Length: 226
Ligand SMILES: [Zn+2]
Ligand SMILES: [Zn+2]
Image 1 (cartoon, helix red, strand yellow):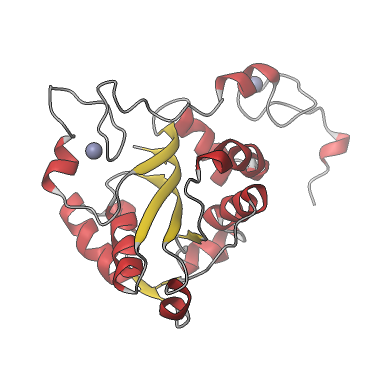
Image 2 (spheres, rainbow, N blue to C red):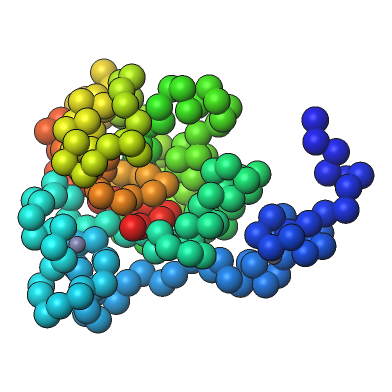
């Protein structure tokens, strides 16, 4: 047990004395970004800034995704990346609630939420699942059901692999839960939820499974987007 109440409390973001896990200035620093203005030099699929005059980014030009676009609350750069580290590893699981409040209005059109499932060994190690926690909070805020339609097979962690290997590994790493096809028949749109999207290999593999099982459209929402 951690005796928080007996210790001087410090901001987990910057270390100043603070009665809250994040001090006021860190709370302001870590405000979620508005959805990207896709007219303003951004890729209309993944939202990343376009470096040249083009209608989409290099990644989205070479890869045909099975989803129309990805929405993220933060760019996965500082300070958003730091905040995600604090959420996953630094004791700030409480961030799921404000992130869910910020993200809920973006779930249009609404549909059931499908979390990307964790590696079993990470779940054992950590004792909780950062994606599941965020998805549950999101479901409560938006009044949407959470459907666990995907399962994770034991496989290599994506982090250690090169980009091309990630796509192959991701395709082998996920499978449909037995109830998936029956439930997807009833929903034209589902929202796939992940914590961080970098190469897009994981969300592509999961989205492809959902589409092949009958989802007419898969939308993708994450907290940190490359
Ligand atoms: Zn602070
Ligand atoms: Zn793109």
